[in-house]
Length: 553
Image (cartoon, rainbow, N blue to C red; front, top):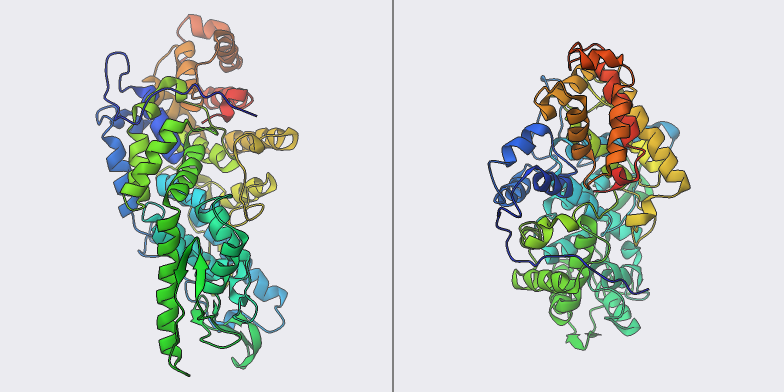
């Protein structure tokens, strides 16, 4: 079906003007897209910064410490580095017993909480890493360090060089296992990764042939993972399945079950045959690395326009709208090519453009389930100065975090709820990823999204810290107004990115006032210090989340 695109604006840099001012609406729009919202303090500060804020936000996100690189503590009680980057053999046994598997799942839950915590705390790069996890799809393995290596690369390359990203991800243990690259031999090349490299990860359908797939598969034979299966008592190798040094990249060398060093013809060009020194694994490995580079050089040279459009279209759909205008897509693609595949340059071009800040182009995307809950936490600033981890693992045993859990929020619950709705971190639905947009909403997911969000809104109201935060939030966004109509309108502005009909707003005002005698509003008795204000907030928020427009971003 043809789609008529009426989106406005060009990629020329946005300059504030009387008709298009730098105001709260545009600041909300920027933070909604980049990081799923922001607390009131950042919104107010941004009004003084101007559109140059984009450069600062992207540069700060790129320079932010990568997962596992620094030791961060909260009141000295939790280590936020990931202790299982290099897995000990003793974590496994040859029978894959339930106790050992349970330890893995605790470490896996720890990792998903790291990710969700990052989405709430920092936002931008963690949201973009979620996009890339839905582009370079793998699935959760039963090896914690493999998952961490994949997670690390998603963050390391999120705003970096896309070509290098492709090269790095193709040799991760998760990808080698998921798309069978670890089992691709000269005598029997496996085409799974080769096909997805061309179809889903770079250029898209229609830009290659089946012969190209077969030749790319030949070019990537011989790469695997170092495996070894350990007995947890003797610590001796008893077979092959689980890794020795988890995540160790291995090359098999030449031979039937190694790499095919013959000539390859790909996309109309050739990679010449090579002859490593007989029996010299180091020489064979060196040549194979050269060929791996040559393969990607060839792909990114011969199909650069297709790759640029394919990736820019996916980025646009993730951040803006399902159907990008041709002129915007073509412009972003040219920026991508001329920047030598720099992801941050493309995003800066989009987020600083006139097109991005046109009011008609706001609120056109549909939130994923993770977007929905993270947007709520970030916008309402439900952090209380603390990170969100609920537990830590000591000596392979899960223990409750010693911090006051009343000041924390259950990231593990968020993970399970979103997985139940179909958005399972580290486990997209298939190799093509979640389709997004309207697919997030159906009869099951919409009702259960409401149920889930209602539990997040009022499930912790009995905790004094939560009630206090709700009251403070309303004071912050309204400058401690005594006018319920004004307060409700401000709250709607924070959570809904489009203009709402007046009758809906008036219904929201009635919802907010419903718990308080009406004469209290007339005689000045009611203020935001009134005892029932936290419940007024939850009553109103539960109304807002049922509005169709609340699903927009």
